[in-house]
Image (cartoon, rainbow, N blue to C red; front, top):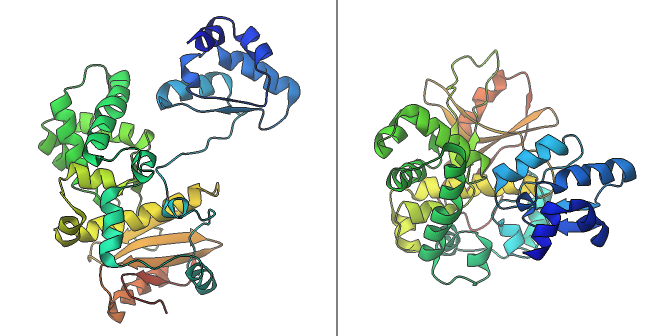
Length: 341
């Protein structure tokens, strides 16, 4: 607390006592530091002198945007990816057989029950490390202390009961097209509030939206985005799946697997500092592709299915992309098969 007081009330002295390179955690509690950090950055022009972290993203970003615009790189810290949990170096996902073969030498295969245990358990650092043994208490505390706090900071008084109904309604629609009216009705709030709270969850890094792929040729495509959580454990907690076995056999098993797969791919790009160009496809004829990866002038389509014996007809829908001005690259079905090929 003495350090925080010095940082806030005498930032010049604080930065004399603690010279860069320096990592300052919870920097949002000393917003007066930002102006002095800007001064040092402009004088020295040395990247990496300051590493700033904070758990209250809105206060943190306010200071960054007001004082450090154009001087910082922003790194998104999602819940842990499976590669991080397994102790493997970061690597962006790609549909490349050589890459799959290389990974197969270092990554142990898991069974479907083991995978759903991972999906149900979630990927919060405290849970993965074993620091918190009761996941229900961990997730309930996370919502009431972190999420509700940041929502209150932005919109003032929040009805905790309605907010819990809202985030539960959102979780029940994981890996589905976002319907603001349905979410608002379930949570007993108006549509504008639902949109505002969705934006807050997205900014907090709890959810992300996957937008549909379209162009001037593909005119029959749906325009509504799909909604995903970064952490499937939170989805399972909110939708009250009491065990991995129940989640695996429940009505949401396909959605949970899709959410897990898409979030892992997104995290794989974030963890190497690359922006993922990911979309889904759905048109008015109900033709759908779960995920499309755009890169190097190509579109690589993916289907995600909870099956060990995928039907070849699954990839028939990939043909709709032939109308796109971009070249169609390699496609794949991500499923529970015992070996790839």
